[in-house]
Length: 76
Image (cartoon, rainbow, N blue to C red; front, side, top):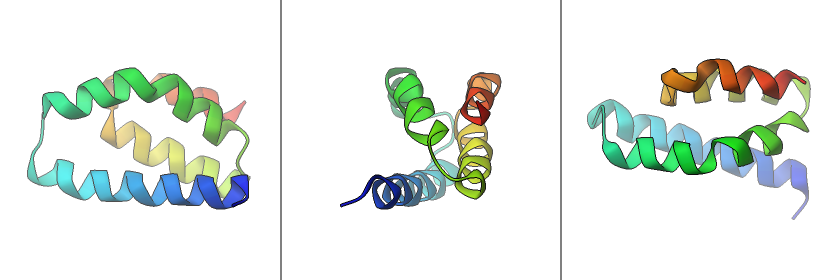
């Protein structure tokens, strides 16, 4: 599986997380997940194509608003 495909799969997973988070807002589980994976997600999406970068920044900012400025590092 190519990295481009992997990034798209991770993005699709983030969309699923978003739909769950809308039903269960302020879950500690999501806070723990994004605290643990924030830097890894930034690294993964910083090498994506510009369109996916922008979508990733948007969704990550919505999923983890307290760290939205950190996700701006994806732009490079």
